[in-house]
Structures are given as structure tokens and as C-alpha cells.
Length: 111
Length: 113
Image (cartoon, rainbow over all chains, first blue to last red; front, side, top):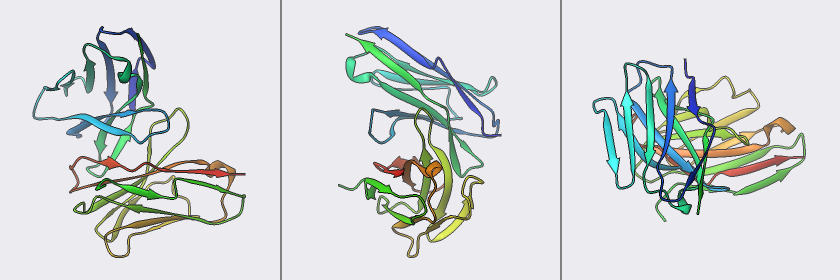
């Protein structure tokens, strides 16, 4: 199936602290896992992705880790800044054709 | 701007009217996707094209919805006899190949009154 769950639904962090969002997916055949950031009224923006041949990928302050055995992957944001406040969606490629998205995590960075 | 573009950005229509949206993908991308997003939810897949061929449609896509990509470039999504439940953000995305990164357009927000 194309189910995906994100935890927690809302996350508040103090500016400068780290934020971690975990995503659990259902399709064990999937091999592509992107994260999107969506600010209010704007388009989903691809911020990082990972393919199943690696376990971790970093890009400046953000990183994604993948555990295919447990079927979960996580987004890590370090040294959070107010502009990191947004809704973050995890997704996985389902059936090699479409992205199946979670319901999103609201991240609030408190200055 | 070489990103995905959509037109119009907002559409308000009365129930029962027909509406059509347009999406222009990134020029070298051969895949084009339509998603729908409602408040508090992630995008939900509707349909996708590879070049001009429509290869898959979600069960969410009732027979009132039709999509085309006649020349393998821009795409249109038409909703006939709109219903209030059609109110949503309609997002278009494009990619190069099945496993290419999908980049989204700004969306068309449809309000059916």
C-alpha cells in the first residue's frame, strides 16, 4: 500500500536546537524518499532526498537517514532558525510512478 | 523563470461550472504529474503523463476530471460540473524520468461556491 505516517504532527523547538521528524512507510519496494518543505501559501519545495543505496545524506544543516529494514526515514535539522518554520512532508515513490505523501509536520522555531 | 508554472493561481467558480487549469513543466522534463492538496493534508496523486501519454489515473479522479498533454509539453486539467468537494489546491509537478526529482508548481487554488 501507499501509507505513510509522520511523527510528531507538531514540533516546537528553540532557535538553535535540533529538530527531528520521523516517517514510516508501507511499500518495502520503494527506493526513493524525498522531503518537502511547504511554507504557508507556497508550493512544496524539495529540500533533500535519499535513495535506498545509501543510509544517510547531508546538505548543510539538514540530513536524512534511512532504515529500509524498519521502513522508516528521518529528517534532521540542526541549528534551527526562524526561517525553518514550515510544514515538512515526507514522501516515498510508490509503484515507481507516483509520490505518496504523509500528512505533514508543523515545525515551529521559537526565536 | 525555468521552474514549473501554473495558471491561473486562483479560481472561484460556482457549483456546476466547468474549469480548466494549465501547467507548464520544466522544459526538459518528460514526466508531468497532477496532485490535489486540501487543508492539513499532503498532496494526493491524481494522474501523470510520460510525454503525451497519460499512464496512470488515481481512483480519486472521477469521470468529471480529464487531463491532457497533447504535445508532451504543457498539460491541462479540466473539471466538469464542479462540486464543493472539488475545492482544493491543484498542484502540478514535473520530473525527468520515473525516479527523477519532482518539482512542484505554485498550484491553482480552486474555490467552488
